[in-house]
Amino acid sequence: MGHTTQTDSSATAILELRSDLDPELDDRFNNWCDHHHGELLSLPGVLRARRYRRPDGRRGTGRYLTVYDLESTAVLGTPAFLDHRRTGIPMPEALGPSLVFERTVATMVGRAGDTSGADALVRGLVHDRRSGPASLADWLLETGPGPATGVCLYQPGDRPDAPLVALLDCRSLGGPEAAGGADLLHETVAYRLVFDASSPRSPADHREPG
Image (cartoon, rainbow, N blue to C red; front, top):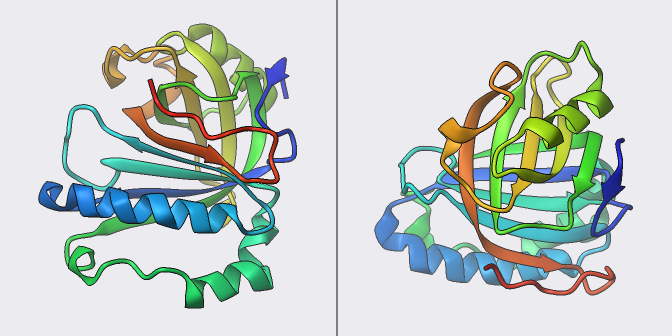
């Protein structure tokens, strides 16, 4: 999977949520998410939680990006995870009518560089896989935005023919149009880090952005 340094090598999958809601509800949304992330991080197999926000404030699905690192996709079907869905702190009712989101479960297929985290991230899609995921991750690391410090590639589990999801940790951002590798990386969106914490069972500690 390329030359790699990462927070927890046992992470092989992600649960990704791209969401948006009325900006007037952002504070309430973020407060609830902070507690919700903490609850999920207490569950076996949930290794890390990160939340990002688009700095341009553009509305639409994906103004917020939440990424949970998992030991495997099987974590989402464990008794502990399913029980939390019934007993966890419920989302405030005020958020429901405004909140829209897309949920993706994906397995890691390529990784390169230092994926321990950065204060900025670019998300994109990769349609062309002729070079193989490991080579693609190395190439995006060398040519990506920021410049990129780490790259992870994921295959959505419910859509085997879907494009790969690319998450690129970056030192800084010049906007999605500044993303390198334009012939491979598509539908890029730039994000700033809002929250980053790891499971108490993980060697990584809570990290404040910026």
